[in-house]
Image (cartoon, rainbow, N blue to C red; front, top):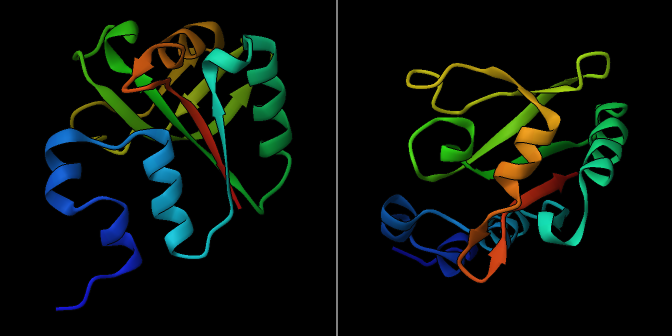
Length: 133
């Protein structure tokens, strides 16, 4: 069995039992030749977050993955990564397309609440989001 670029980023068992940071997820995606840009919540504010969402959702060429602490949203106390599906500007809510929909269905979350869930520590940096092209 050969080692792929993906295995060099973080092994399956390490991900399964320990999750992934934004930097690790970015490295994993880039191992597949995908362009990524990491945004740490601690380096921005909620208005910056809104601008990134609006810009990103205006194009079908890219998407956003968020890394947030579920407990801030009243869910189990673990970090989690899911894509953003939509933004409702009138209600100021973000549609989180939860990848574990069998456990937590897709949900509309107040933008400020989601930003607060991202603005929590994960290893050496805050959580945040990744723009994927």
